[in-house]
Image (cartoon, rainbow, N blue to C red; front, side):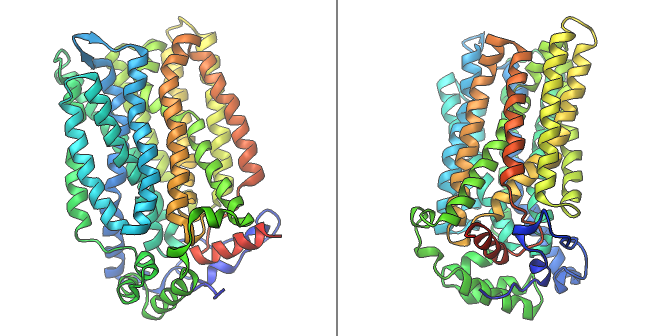
Length: 493
């Protein structure tokens, strides 16, 4: 195994993060960052890549967040939706996202990251328009499923693309910009919902306007990907060494670009020819893969999307009127964006593992308090404001720690030979878990009530904290190639 071109990457051994006294360098420390990071052209190029590619995350966020405001207005055949119909409409996107994430990883490995993102932009546009003009529940469910294919594909390929283009020392900050765009998309959806509901409160088609807005960022994403490069790692992996080196030269110093390109070629030369199932027969690979699946499930079992999808209904059940609930959901979106900024900053100062554990403790405590407040303050005029403050607290921990660490680690933890396929399969599990939460939540609330439902999520949260504390490795400060070597050493002892 060739030494990493990033000297800082090898300073701490992964297996001894809990006991060793060394601390990984700050990702933005100029002594450890790429020498070309001071080149304004390189910085602008990397910034352009991050902004344009993460429009996929913006679409992900808008399309998953808009439904919370659209559902209360949605009617077919001039009647409101039943809890089962609500759950089916919400979860149809999630089921599509599960399939899209699984297929997306495999397609990204075969056809390229950039091409897939461009194709997903077309799917985003067509499906958003189809949702807005859906004449029946059946058409809505089908259109939401197709939209989910794009959401799931983007959830895998965008962070993968960013991780493979980023210098190791800046990977955490750049990849988690996608999470910032996701929560920004959700905030945009909440604002659009509230504004449209205020401007045309009695209009029967207001929910259709809410849904069609998602077609606009898809246009930006499509044309943006036309001017961006392919992942240099994918190019080198597929025998296009000169093209991959040319991309790296635009992002790295000359000598570093050549060292990194050569290391990628040596390290990943078997990647195209190795099936996922064959690699999973290797014990250390299987161990890393199981940890990745666990991280994916943990992120959804916090119950975050019960608040994102049904936040308006939760606030209405606690005592807000419809417009007050829509405005309250904006507060949830604002805190999500602000918390993500904090999370990005923290990723430069603390490790992935302690940040995730802290986030899970915070979300679990918040869920307990929501359940307790709903039971103890039932009928009190203070209840809606207490519930809103607790959902805001929950989202501060979720979006500031749990979600950014989850997507970042899924983009970096898997071995290079199976990275796309393994990430896709982990995202499949994540979205299937999301599907179950989205489908069952309104029915659980209808059958059990708010308090028992949130207590149930809190119990699962305790298990998630235990899993992460016992199993999760640290990945901060390593190049992808160095990280793989450290994981192999740790899990083959």
